[in-house]
Image (cartoon, rainbow over all chains, first blue to last red; front, side, top):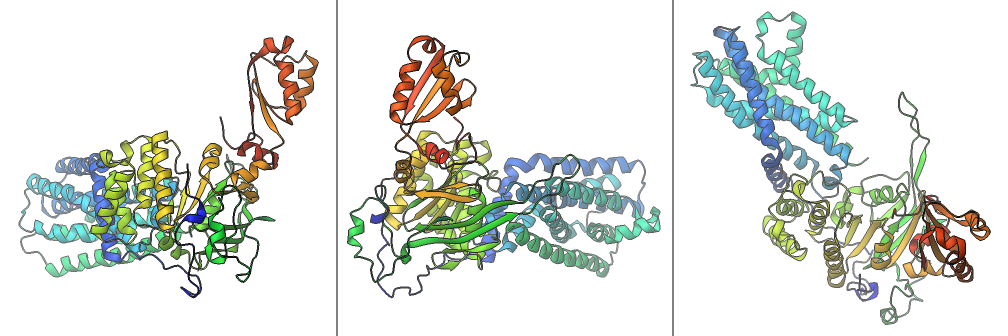
Length: 273
Length: 361
């Protein structure tokens, strides 16, 4: 069926001296931001096909926890951390758990080859996917926070702080999720790590810290989602200490930068085997 | 020697290129000068390390997936890598596309050293792998557009090329559907479309037409031919479909256990076994071994259930056909075919390790 003989195709006879060493010009490199935007847009569109049921699961899980805790916690600072913990749990579910699974599967199936044979910076692929997964969490987090405030009678005055909490804890958790997914040697392990991370965020974030033993509290301090929870919990007070809120968010941002850098490195490593 | 290259020839003794225009590649390949080599592979070797046995998982010895491979792919040709599963085709392709680092050897594509600069491969070639996970949940249109953008096109050009490619391949009607919801062949065609957005001088296609219907196949090959005619695009094709290999390839390298055991035009390869024909006998229930002529044939036949496959010189074949179409043997015969050699026969006569051949019928 291939009817063009190789001899008659153009570009065969070259003038002497033209591109002397015989090197072809390379195609353009995809630049960081445009390709990040392209990956982000593509990932976001996947939500329409595959992610919506999971987003519902994430939200219902958190709302269920709120309702359950209503019977145990009456109000005060404990209620604040329950509401904040449940809201951030949505971020942990989607950004940490689902992203770890996604990258784990992509790596195992050979899907990374698609990106690895395109001239796209690794950071664009990792950041684009992480940003998209963090974005998926916005509706669920907002719904959970508002529902929690109504249920426990907390003020909604400072809920705008979610606009900082979601992206920053999203960056930290999706960075961890991506790193887990890309580093795990097998996809089941990536799923396991994602699930464990989410369970930790659930247990250590939702339950009030005052009642925890010292050792568990240390683990809690190591988990980046904790700082998102604390930042949000502080803003339920009448006069939030904004310096502490900013400090907590700065930790999230720092972990985000570090974990996304690790994830980018892990992507590079996974792409060329 | 596991190679397939151009014999060395200095530029001085190269004749004027006009002569080569008159020769069809199929009949006799014309060796171009070095500038015409798009992809030069030398001594490429990759060994997968042995895996120690664990509980429930037996160990595997070290495997040479590619063994001292030498190749020259010339500008504008459709060059095929043919071989059974596990012959090392995909490993070879992964090394050519910068996805895998070889243990030793060199890969030079259009003058660029891909072993030293694997990242350059992405800027020279387009690769269609076997897996579509990365695109599965995107719509056909977005898959093509995103791939174009990640190939460095701006939004306007990516969209224009996307529209042109989808039209060309007849995918415009399903442009809005996610790949996941498409049939295997349509999905494959959509991935092929994505590979074409953002023109590249070299297309590396790993079994591009798997699962496609004849219409889709034709769309693929006419898209490939158009690019060859207009831009001089070179195609490196991995296949284990012998029929397709015979019709679309200019040259083919036959791989077996990581080594290139033959490399020529399909017609040239078939000439190697031109003195043989293939006789296939299908028995109704079992072979009538009580007929002495049939019993004598058994040693030379490759048996697969009720089917016997024999490779014979024409006179012998005539005798066999005469025997089985008469007398007691005919009563036991269900069907028989007599065929001229195909690439499949070439592979088997070259001593291909997988005795069942390249493709399953």
